Length: 221
Image (cartoon, rainbow, N blue to C red; front, side, top):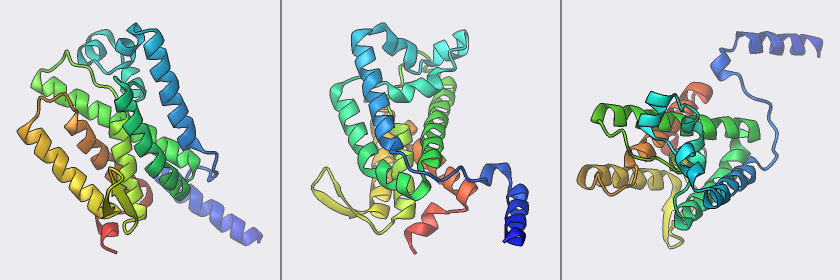
């Protein structure tokens, strides 16, 4: 037993920091995230000015060092329908992914991919000169969660809009096509399609780097 513990400890020390697993436990982190989003939504209703402080504003981030917005923007929603559909997605896909990853790893996955999606959006706005818009919503992180769900459970059946049956891997492919099409042919409709695609991309990279899990290959196993 002592030899096993020693070898396990040595293996852990040799593991790169970006692959060291967080303690595995389960404490309903998904429900906590939903509660946090609902509380922020209520806060924004009571104090409307807080919405502008918490949303991602490229000009404010770069000129006033409001870097906290890279984190807070994903907890801000502009309407009831916006938060409703995001939280439904988080509940259905997040609870399953949390079971696969463990709660601590899931929290890291959710918040890191969401922040990176926000950072990518900030860079895109900087390059295109669109510095005055507001970016809000959990969609970037939730798209990463959808990708993670499909990577671990590619054969799972889901109902899109509660009606259309698809396997999880097919859902990711269809969503990607829709987001690319919408960005190309209707880029000014007020929906952050590139943020959604960035969520997919960073979810893919997270799984590849931390778990050596290639989501695309996992789709076809």
